[in-house]
Amino acid sequence: MQAENSSANRDEPPERNPFQALKEFKSAGRGFWHNVPDADWNDWRWQLKHRITTVEQLQKFLPTLTPEELAGAQLANHKLALGITPYFFNLIDPVNENCPIRRQVVPRIEETSTAAWEMSDPCGEDTHSPVPGLVHRYPDRVLFLVTDRCASYCRYCTRSRLVSNASGYDFHPEYDKQIAYIAEHPEIRDVLLSGGDPLLSSDEKLENLLGRLRAIPHVEFLRIGTRIPVFLPQRITPGLCALLKKFHPLFISVHSNHPRELTTEVRDALGRLADAGIPLGNQSVLLKHVNDDVDVIKAHVQKLLMCRVKPYYIYQCDLITGSAHLRTSVRQGLEIMEKLRGHTTGYAVPTYVIDAPGGGGKVPINPEYVLCRNAGRVLIRNYEGKVFEYPEAADGTPLAKPRQIEEPELA
Image (cartoon, rainbow, N blue to C red; front, top):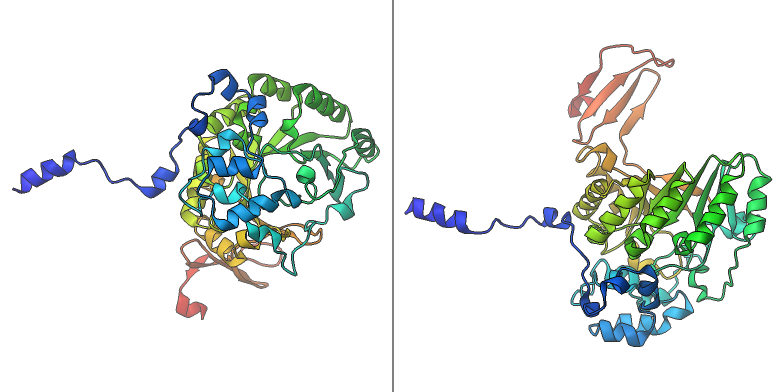
C-alpha cells in the first residue's frame, strides 16, 4: 500500500512554489488585440496610437472597474492624463482590484484628495531650475527634461504637475537654453535625460540631442531615465540600440516595480540594450499593495539580475499630491531591506532612499547595522541579528582580536 501511494504521489504535478512563480518569465499576450497583425502589434507607434486614454475605452476593456476607479478615471485628466498601452494593459488582472499592475496605471478617486503634507513639487525641482527644463540640484550633474509625455502614466508620478499637461503646467523644453547652460558650467559632468520619457522621441531627435550633449567637453557621461522598456518594449528596436551605442559612456535607468512587469518581451528588450554595451540599473518606488512585500521585492530584484539589470534604488513614495493611498511606511521599507541584506546576493540589494521633501536630494535610509561606536571599537549587527565587535583605535589600527558579542554581554 505504501509503495502504491508513493507511486501515485510521483504522478501528481509538483506543488507550485509562489515565490518561483513570481520569477517566471511570461509573455504579456495579446488579449483583446489578438486579431491585430504582428507587424502592427510589434510597432511601437501602433501601440501609442491605440493607447487607452478615455473612460469609455477603460470601461470597455475593464468592465470590472470599481466605483472608486470609475470616478477616478472620469476626473483623471484634471491632474494626470489617463494612458495605458495595449501591451501593458494585458498585464492587468481584471478580477483583482488590488492587482499590482492595475493600481499603478488605473486612476482612483483618492487621487483627488490632498493631505496637508503633500506637495505638487515634492522634490523642489522648480526652485532648482536655472533655465526651463533643466534642474541643477547636485553639484556635478543636471536633470535635463526632454518631454512631458509618457507611453503610460503612473498614478504616483512625482512630476504629475508637468507630465501630460493635464494640470495646465504648459511645459515647453528649450533645448538651446538647456544645452547652453550645461556648456557654460564646466562642473557639470553628468547629464540625466528624463521627462516624461526621452525614448518617446524619434531616433533622429534623440541622435541630435545626444550628439549636442556629447560634444560638450566636460560632460563625461550621459544617462537616460525611462520606463519605455516596461511600458513599450516594442520601442527598443535594433536601430535604437545601434543609435544609443554611438554615445558611450551612456547609462540607462529603467523603472520597474513588480516582477510581473518583467515579461519575456521586456527581458528581450533589456537584452538588446545590454548587448549594445549599455549599463542598466533599475529604480523602483515602494507602493502599497504593489510591492510592499519582501517576497515580491526579492523576486523582483532577482528577476532584474536575470535581465542583466542592477537593482539601483528603491524610493520611498514621494509626497506628491493625491498619493496617500499608494504610500507605505518607511518602517515597512526598512523591514524589507533587512530581509534582503544577507538573504540574497549583494548585487540584488538596491539602496533605499527618500528624496528629501522640498529639494534636499536623495538620502539613503538603512537599517541600523552599527549599534555603537567609540574610540576603541565598533559594534555591528549582521543579517542574522548577531552582534560583533570590530576593535580599532582612532587611527583605524586594530587593538585586539575581533570577537562575537553575546547578548547578555552587550546588555
